[in-house]
Image 1 (cartoon, helix red, strand yellow):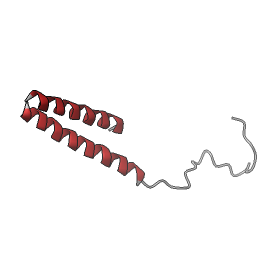
Image 2 (image 1 turned 90 degrees about the vertical axis):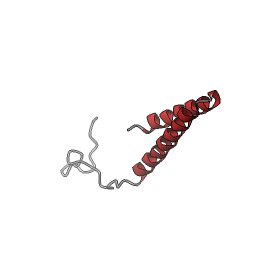
Image 3 (image 1 turned 30 degrees about the vertical axis):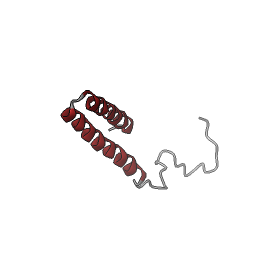
Image 4 (image 1 turned 90 degrees about the horizontal axis):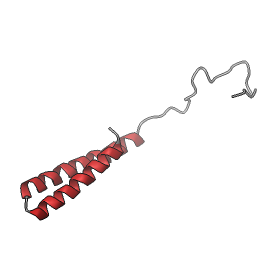
Length: 76
């Protein structure tokens, strides 16, 4: 899932929870805050998992390798 959507969803739930608490709807307010905290944890963890994925250093595909014309510039 897109991390940006998770961030905005947790922000919206946090704001809704605070407004519901001020209105006096405590069960809905606390429920919204709990879901907001859970969503923000998922958002934080999704950002960490992308940083630790292995990316090979030899990422050239077979089409890009040219055995005969090494050092020769190719047009576009």
